[in-house]
Image (cartoon, rainbow, N blue to C red; front, top):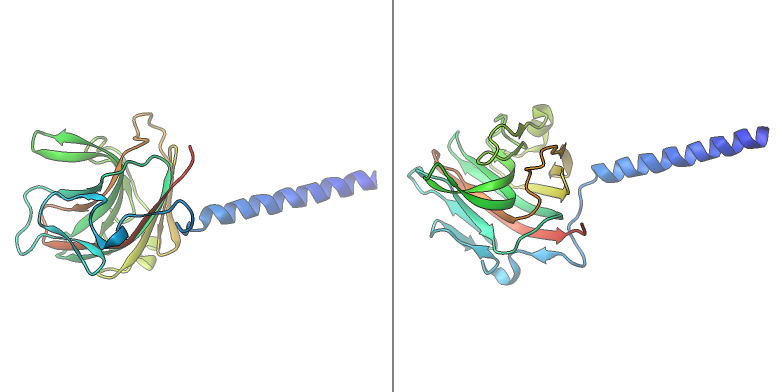
Amino acid sequence: MKQIVWVLALAFLMLSQLAFSQEANEATEPPVKGAGVIDLLKGGTLEAWKVPSARWQLKEGSIIGETGSEKLDTPEWIYTKQRFSNFEFTCELRLTGDSRRNTGIYFRVNTISFRDRFEAPSGYEFDAAATGDKLNGSVGDWYARPSLRISADSSVINQVYNSDNWNRMTIRARGNRLEYWINGIKVMDYRDPDPKGSREGIIGFQMHDGSVMKVECRNIRVLPLAP
């Protein structure tokens, strides 16, 4: 009897350690390095990207989208040519400008006509904005499913997000599960229950309308994952 109890206790301990290890791994930011990783600025060119206008340029190893002194009437996006489904993605992003500045990493995007005004992304967004903005770190699908807006914990975001400076932003998308990290800290873990949620598409960065702003993106890498 004692032997059975000891075996059960040992099994419980091993399962507990395994569960703890899995939880730790789930919280750890993926490095997005090694075999299979795609450098989306390989060769120091924009060859991997569909460039919408001269407002988007490559300078000193960074994609730069800048409005200039005038606000845009409609937003713009620069997108990858390649499509992705399940993946890990990382980049360093810096957003500067006026108090309404806003950008986002869009993924699994399929473009749609928005109110017959402009071509917009149907897909997910990892939002980035000025410090204190509740959109920072959120999940959204604004143009196709405007009711979807899952906010991150603002107390965490305000601690880890460096306003007007470089931030490492990482995404893992697997099926309906979306995970976000900012500077190594996990800020979002969301499972989208809606079957309309996009499962495959292009990746892009936004230059928002209604503000004077500049977004810079560098060290942009993606690792496709198995289904």
